[in-house]
Length: 315
Image 1 (spheres, one colour):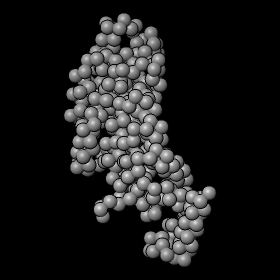
Image 2 (cartoon, rainbow, N blue to C red):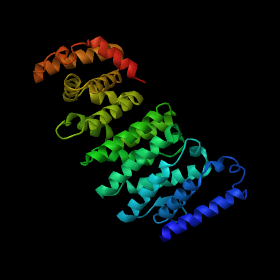
Image 3 (cartoon, rainbow, N blue to C red):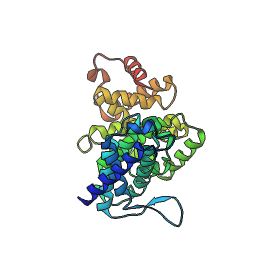
Image 4 (cartoon, rainbow, N blue to C red):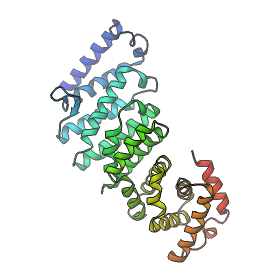
């Protein structure tokens, strides 16, 4: 009750400040977009963040609380706040400030050993990145990339899937960023053995143990990594076990999976290589796994039609 009252009071002060013209040159028009609900949720968010976010020795703000209850409280407040934002609001300075603070908090919370907190944190990370979209370039995401990449091999499938989804969103947004940013991100991925973790996930995937979205998200993440950093391709095409597994998934799974596999092949090189690898892996599957010809699974589709479908779905 006290927290709610404090949040309401803080929101009221912010509303009065805006009405009185205290928002400065940038707040006159744009900040009028902030509704009472947004102001209230933002006030609650910052009250929660104040429990663990602080400056140390005059340096930048850091998340300093290891209390699971406080971390969970902050994540709930962040999720509620992010859920009420519109595209127009995302460009306002107060909202950008709040999102920056959430990122700092996530950087610390994602290092928690509490599984329940980590599930919340990866979900909020995905919600934040999905909400800001291309505006993610305006925020320092390097640290959160490192934290999420470290969770790709998590035993909890939910954590691994959310981490892969969030990284996929971030990397797609940064695909055309400056080479210096790519270098920093790649260093973070190398430091956390992200490619090895994704390859391991694809090799160890079992439909009896893992949900289908686990396979799909890992393939999508590996694909964008291969597109941005060609040097990582060697780790994939030189891994016969992985290539055989991918071919097996392609012929033994539903069409969506086959398309993802072909798009992953496309990230390995030219269209000619896509067809070559596809044909090679089909033959490997037939020889090693005694899998019937692809036509028995997809009687109305040829390899060329599958490839055309892949091109249509590629970015």
